[in-house]
Structures are given as C-alpha cells and as structure tokens.
Length: 154
Image (cartoon, rainbow, N blue to C red; front, side, top):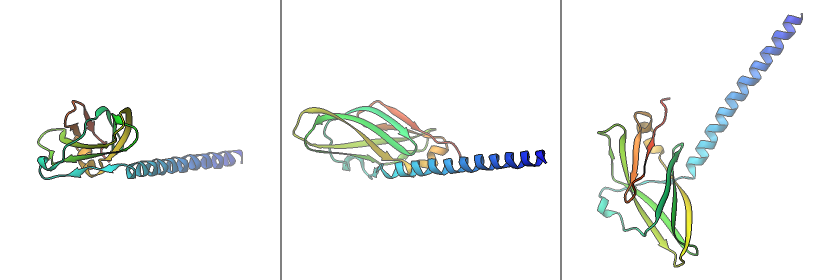
C-alpha cells in the first residue's frame, strides 16, 4: 500500500513539473513575441541613393536580442523630436554568413545641444530563416561595428 501511495505521489510531482515547464516555455515565447512587436521595421529600398541624408549621431552599441536589433545611440538634443530609420537594399547571400548592410537616416529636429542617448529596436523577424541557416552579418553605413544574427535550427 505504501508503495502505491509513493508511486502516485511521485507521478503527481512529475506531472506538476512537466506542466510547469511547458507553462514556462509558453510564457517565454509570449515575452519574446511581445518584445518583437515593440521593434521598428527595417525599410527596404531599391536604390541606395534614394535614401535621404542623415544628421550625425554616434553608435555606441549594436546587439541582438531574439529577433530585435538593439542600437544605443548618442546625439545632440534634449528638447525636440528625433527619429532613426534603417534602410537596406538587399542581402548578400553569396557568403556564409549572409551580409546585410543597413543605411541609417537619423533626423534630429532638436535645436538643443545636450548630449542625449537612446536605445532603439528594429525587427529582424523577416530574416529569421537566414539566421537559422548560417546567420547574417549585420553592418551599418558609417560605423565599423558588425553583429551576427544567428538562431538555432528548430
């Protein structure tokens, strides 16, 4: 009898642990999906010369978290509006990892001259397939930083 009670108790514990792991996995997926919704899109352009000029800014950090490219930038400002758009024209798939070159357009309609910094996020979800099949080396015009966007196979 004690053995049966022990086995039932052990089985219950195992079921609770399995259920909680699945629940945690779903929670993590929901957090990642919510995070990606907060990322701005990358903008495709046919011709690089079509992209407008850019005001100056410093790229302090470029990193990837899930399917989002995170940029930490510094610029003069503090009392007006700023905006950063990222353009790309194509992906060079002839190399491994593939190469994605971004062209920034930073608009600083801010007459103030305080040193400001901001963290911006851009969605890389449309390149997820390439990220899972060898990765993508991401670079940006005017900056020597390169990050690799790579994800494990499913």
